[in-house]
Length: 421
Image (cartoon, rainbow, N blue to C red; front, side, top):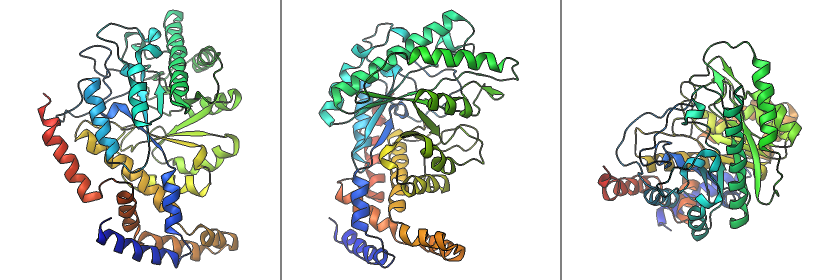
């Protein structure tokens, strides 16, 4: 432990103690936090179905061509190892179907199964990591119409139903092999650029298709299902079949998790405000943490107000053990490993700051109706030395502090990424 870091931490510890906050207890709580890192930041959501696979369509768009993206699964794993080494704590990896190991063979989406992920399971076992999963309902000729599970073409619809079923088999395989449930999220891009007429028809089809996807039961010890809501997207500005209301109703009636993505709502809506309502009716919730700037733009997460509000509410509600937090951004304009580090560390900083809140005092002001006292204490917290506690946590967990993290990422770029053409 660096002497300066320890000295600063002890000063911060004393200052927080005056507010009734035990910093050591907050750090113990942080050790239990496990984020799920999204694999697709390594290669701009291209995947490895074919040697020249690239993201196309489906309401998803990645911008930028910064040098050094991973070109193969071995390179991807090297980049992930580097990213994990920069993030304090023990975390997970979230895989999409398109990141299976296909050995140069063409494998259709409705044929992708556990056998294509044995290498990932071995990799995860070596690192004692859990694996989460997503079906890939985009970048495929069968998705070119803008509809998959809600398609009125039975051939298209049945293809994606089979893909969803096979995806759940993969997730259950992960859970069995790794001893930790795999969280499988189902998101589809279905919707219309202009105003449709038969909204009822598309949503009825989607409901029935999802019932077929989820028909087989798997033990909760192996996998947990989530369905992801969305307000709008690129190419589906006027109508998204899987809206917030649709999936809230579906998840509640079918006993599935609902997935809330920070980029999937109106810019003035806050997911933080939704959590205390959702927690009333759901035992578990999946969050996708991104940073929308315009539309669902999925910028690298930073410690902005949205993240502060979100992480504060998770901790205040006392439900973090039942909240699965996955990262979901993709930026090809910068060093991709650096993007991982910034996004994950910013999310963790938000949670640490939430654990450093004097919750008893704040709730007492709430109960007394003392709006001044509550607001004054919240403002005081903004200038408290949470950074000193964060640095101490990083060193305690064996990862670099902020300035050293920057040097570490730039060195990896020079030594590894620069050689990729």
